[in-house]
Length: 440
Length: 41
Image (tube, rainbow over all chains, first blue to last red; front, top):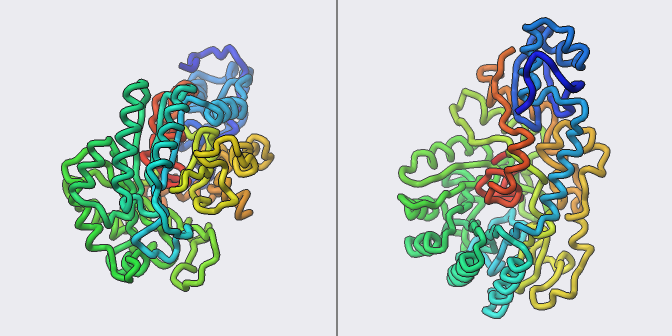
């Protein structure tokens, strides 16, 4: 607990992670990107923060000391000898190079029953062989023997439920190993939702696969235009009906809506539709369609830019549509994405290991194969693991560093795009809309 | 001064979160990293 009494033993300084904007002529809003505290202050109170030092504090009256103490309790003021950057750097590296956690995203096939025009994967035929499945299980077992205490497994594809038997077999094996070796394991699964049945849900529960992501891109017309079967047939009605399979189960279903300038307008209505479903633990969140590879289809050329996205956020937070979107800042973030972690990989059906989801199926990005562990492509690893936001002057001087840690390394190093996820304007809109109602 | 939200993260809670979390990035999101947009959990 911080010292918040009348006497300060150490010198004081303002946090480098204070985001400030003028609310009006007489007041400002402060948001600390590390502690996530938000306060509104008048100009005199703001001056206390700007002038802070131990000697200044000692001269203040009792009322001002209380205000300064509140600043300190909420992280807007820190001890002079506390280096906020070094603190973040320490936990960033500690997490990045920890061997106590293993995160694997496993695609038992890259085949899919859908033909979504915006998909970034290049589909290929083939399903994971029993030999590859067993080698991956051996790899996990060996990593546990080397110190892993927590396993994080995500089933991915293609469409993983095309290989439901593989998901079942491997999950059961991994659960057995985890139990024998006293390791915590958590499973999640990313599916388009079309092949979900009561039997599949029972298999999920049996194996403790308790977190699912299902993508729905709007209401029926919009979704069917974007996420259809290879035959061209729509999928909305079946996916929505399949959600009933999760009723009265322990499974959390995260509905993801991939948004661009074509479909974002459906977001509030989709959320209301999902929220009206009784008995299923569900939430809806938007995710921006990324321009990862050149596409011919006109239907996928509606990518949002930063301005579009800010407008989208504002419209969905405003009180007008009563949408109440489930969006929040990620808490306790230590890095941007698990691709940056030494002990995190994406595995395809051939047993090839990659760092990033966006690279699956591309041979040049293979780090190693589970059958040839000694043959390592370090170039594919270091572009993620060795990319260091603490070596980037722009990141080091950015008050949003605790929220993003340098952003997506695939976007930065492969696509050579800007990876700054936050702007002053975006942050202001977010705070105003989420916390200061009626301000917009 | 109007406190709209008190501190959700402290040095101590940040240090402990990795051990408590079941997700890879140490956040409390249910699905993570690529599966989450940057700003959400």
